Image (cartoon, rainbow, N blue to C red; front, side, top):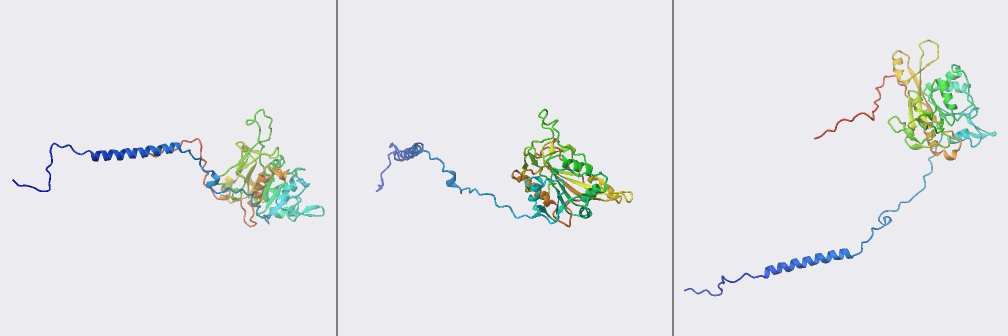
Amino acid sequence: MAIQYGTVPADPAAKPSRRPAMLYGAVATAALAVLVVVACLGFMTPKQDAPAELLTQDLVLFKMEPPPEPWSPPANLWMYWGGSPNKRFGHSGDNLRHLVKLGRLAGGEYRDPHFLFTYEAQTFRDLSEACCTTMLVAPMKNNMPIWNAQSNVAQRLRNYVANGNHMIFTGGSLVSMEFINRYFYYNMEPIDAQGIFKGSGYGNWSPGPFRKLIDDDLPWQYKLTPDTLYQDHISVTSMGLRSLPSGTTVLYMTPKSSPVFMIKFCQRISERHGEPPIKTVPRDCWRHAARGYPCSCGTITYIGYDWHMDQTAADWDKVMLAAVEYQQDPDVSETFSPNCKQPPKVVEDPHAPHAPPICK
């Protein structure tokens, strides 16, 4: 029988050792105890409030508005300074004159080479036969110039605008509206209270506010004007949208009226030799041009504020300066004469059904 040294024969009846199992159990118990301690500390520790906003971000430093940029009137700006506007100090005519920086005090009155005292003068006849000037008409508080609508002076007014010039009328009363209707053959009407404020007694007054109509037709000069204009007591006269003529670009509006808009006024050569030009709707200019009678167009701008108090007119001042800047080029008219056929304007119907979605 062979004898082996250094080894002890295993006893098949002996039980396996419990030491590894006991070790694993102790480790698991210790880990669970640590988790319990951490959880208890988390609940027992008082929750700290989030740090104040000023401690985590830079301070917002409030500053006053920067001073206005230096501004001078365009070289082609004229102002009607006859008997119609109120020229007394602090009134509408004087406030507008001060806003556009025309006039120097001399001999107890304001004088300027670009003041027009009457439409019957040779100065206005020369202006009406040339292009690319702007005529600012202050609110006609004293009177309204009256002539026969077919007279030479009235025709000169129409020729002035149609020759690529720009005429700015201001509101506050119905006189400017009557002036435009009489001499430019329109039928504009102030906003009527019927259907909007029934039984309220508002009459021809619109309470506003007036929102800027931001679309592709908005001239760039009005991009930085306020988005909203407000009624100032009874200082704003707003025209009914349904009464505005074809060729109108609405700049500010309510659902029923507009206090600021631009009208494209066009005339064409008459078929009868020697007769005055004929007023033409802008959309028909290409038809007459195809027959050899082209159109020439200018712009009438209406701003329905009366500037009776310059302390409350800051937003309206910006609109007026934008209108003055509209025709600032003394060589090229800003008004496009549509003597070529234009593609029809696509108007989106808000009530039309939308195309079905493309599902994958």
